[in-house]
Length: 282
Length: 93
Image: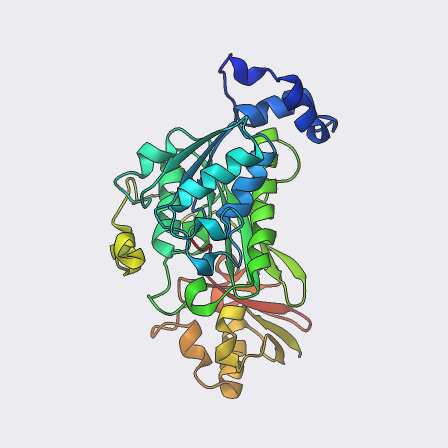
């Protein structure tokens, strides 16, 4: 459960908020105190795209008090098949701008903090420092390894998800219980595993996986249920087959293993053999 | 012995777009060799030149990662489901 000792307006609700969150607060597992934890939670969403859109939307609707969004792209017509934070009139606008407008339109009682820059080693600690939970919706391996390392080194929980074609995956990494490097020690060579832009993705799949990520985020904030920590959900939407695989902490992991060799952030473009993000998206 | 093999969508092209098929083998190494006979080139996608599993791909026996069992020597039995799962990065900015 997220601990936040702020003792200000974030610990009380207006009558409108009580009405807005009534379907949460009526549940024994949430109640007023759980909703207060949600209000005091600080969640960073990496990417305002396919996964970031449904995640951020449900976090906002559910009353997460502070939502950070980091993205440096602008809305493209090809995004609108799946990215529900943006609409036709937003084409050409910075994604963080339309994301903030959409989230505050859904719920004006929350704070939305935006970072219009790529998440890179130079700014990662500064950006994630103010948040308790990091939701990973990145579309590239360099950012995925960066989020993994930065979150582990700063002792933050990562709610991870990915989609491609008709498949999706989701899991949760908490420091001390395994990390992305335990699951995949190294990225594939560039070009071997295609991106959504190259291979395509069923738009609705981003909603399915993003909703799982949002659900896991609320569970983490509330400290309820059985987290996906140590478990990888695999979804094959063509057969609508859901499977769960075990993820174990690797004692040889260079980040969280018995003898770690990664004690600070590295050059992730070099590690993944990719071009810097600004060049990729320019 | 019948082993059920499942391929993640992103690598199904190396098995002629077959998502699931049946093969044989007493351990993972045997299985890969048998699949290679049916789909030439399969082994090179799964193993490095030094015959280790690529680090961006995991092989599961049912829900267990073979790295935490006996790796390529992991014994498999009739009815087991073997999954080949590469890392996915798609979230889409």
